[in-house]
Length: 493
Image (cartoon, helix red, strand yellow):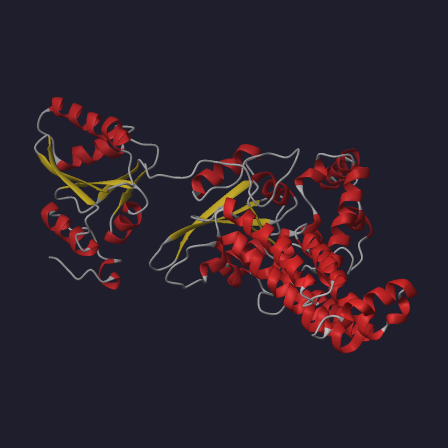
């Protein structure tokens, strides 16, 4: 008996024992889509059907792993349907991934994931074999998290490949992969990763509950699920969920007790819970000597300060506190600002908005054209704006320094872009007093983030003496080794 292709009608329906009706049901569910392949075959006198989706399975694997063994079965002569099914499930090794399904919902789930499905007449069940062969991007170098001495591989859009990149680095049985399907229509594979002996069971359970509670129709990227696992997603300008495309960084976070989430179709991994200081670490920190790593880390903190507050401080000093400049510099600033027709605040906001437009254009266009846009915007437009008197030359220098500093911390760039504008407005309307108020509000907002009972500003607030060392500097690996020995001795006691 056939039925409507509506999802609610087929998701719990059992497979029809009659193979002709079962194939009619499969066509009805899929709307007889053009990429549906149904091969009706007769094996040892039993009617069977091999169903697959064009472009999702490997034709070579199908020929070698399924066709040849089934044709060899003909030597046994006439067989019963149960004998055919027993051969498929127990007496052969047709594929590494094999499972028996009983409903059309499971058939569709595996069929659209690149599995081949074999139906046998009179049984009312089917066997699925994993012989995926769809095109996928190979592992390549990281695009947004470049390192000098770190690994040069990154995640791809295929979740199984990403899992292998992590497993290859962490060869421990305590590494757990929990796969689930999210999205009523997309049934996207989402995998939660954690080390059982490091991650907090309470955090793992909260994240598991957040993922299982998602009721979206489609999940296409990791951004779809981030609001459901980030407790401060709509409460703070910062995010306690960090993304990374580097498998080595993900393994480092797993070793620290964090939980990572991979989404099929997304070449990035979600890492949580994270703290503010995690944004200032790179894999190069573990490849350089500690003194240089400490210097590099302080440069990142300075870059964050310049990217957020430098334009606002410049506006506040020029408009409200000019006495802080030397006489010669003050005269040059006064002459430059006198030649421009607009207030200083409008000039800064105009340049910042122009910079964001050029950055967005550089990101969306091809790389070769994107570089040209940056050159045109930085040299031609900037020089023409100064010569025409629209903006002052000192202000262009400030914006250039700010823009360069903002690229040092790509994980914080969205927050930096908004904070920069807020600090410009605070400095333009309130001077240093306005900047002080904006800073206090920002500190209060950051300290209010307490996802999974972990403060976003840890280990500064609450203060943890041993943890503060890794925020300001990087200790030697001998110190880490000694700390690990102390932990193991404490566990043995």
